[in-house]
Image (cartoon, rainbow, N blue to C red):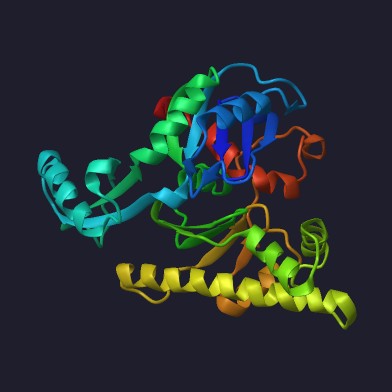
Length: 349
């Protein structure tokens, strides 16, 4: 399957083949001009279509083999929640979901695509039903479909970024995985995903990303964007003894703490929904800025006592020789969503 991740700054493509032992066949990438996609909404269909076509010509190590794709829906303009409902029939549940979502959803219901699925009952929920509800604005979805179609691609499914990230980073059989918080640091936004008891239960998007950390250096230290990007990658937030490197680390530390505090506030809101203070058992970091030096230690300042790891994009990818992977683990972190899309099982299409 081919996964296509269309973000605000780039288009990333991954092709995965094989069912029992999925293998990465090739990856592709193309940049997008600034402001062509803003907060997940395409502003210029012609340019995005051309960038899609361009991406499919820039593949390594081999060309894409077909045109059937699973594409991502940006988390910025989507809504995912678990709703608690009384035990009832499917027809009654459908009506109850429509009513309940109106109380929670931050969008006009007439302008969204809405879907839901029942969650398995547990000992704690045997007297009621839980449903996972997803909604996304039509203004986001329709232009994505138009661009993919104009590029000559056959869309077999659309999927929320969070779903793809989970499929990429967590084991294929994740029924026994409890309390994992995924923090996916993208260029312009950070996705927050809570996964528990075998299912994704909460997502949020914080409108601060790696580019904002870079801009902190540009503005506070009078660097060029290129210099700031290099310093962020090499120095990060690791403590330094003095000189320019220490100034860089201090500025990045301040900006990163600000981002993490916003994420922590989101997590507290999650905790209130789930009525517990200790529901996060582990944190996985992913995305382009996940490998910034010292990041894990700074995350631990805001989330003390919780194990923190960098997510492995190869969790469900099989390699006969991992040293021959077409991407390094650090580069692969940029393709987490595309890999997760490409790993979507054929039976679920």
